[in-house]
Image (cartoon, rainbow, N blue to C red; front, side):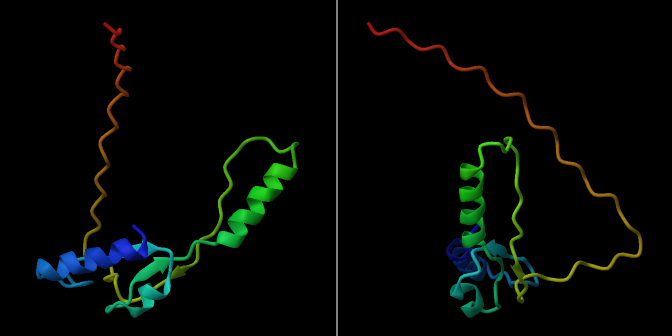
Length: 113
């Protein structure tokens, strides 16, 4: 969620009488001014717009590059919206997510009458 949607999460948490970060941790992206104004401050990752644009232009201008995935670092501004991880005496294995169901076949088109 971006910072403005996180504001809605803050409001919903307050209406539900939940405390950030005691009951609910919130992390967002954009790292806009809003992230610093919220109380508690919102932990948010900055989107490096300039770097994304620069890399896109480089890819367009170099036809020899093969298709692939490029990763760009997104600096994280850590603020007070995330609770520390609980300390456990015994480490428990994390539950694995269930595999995604197979995709549905496309629906046949109806013929016009």
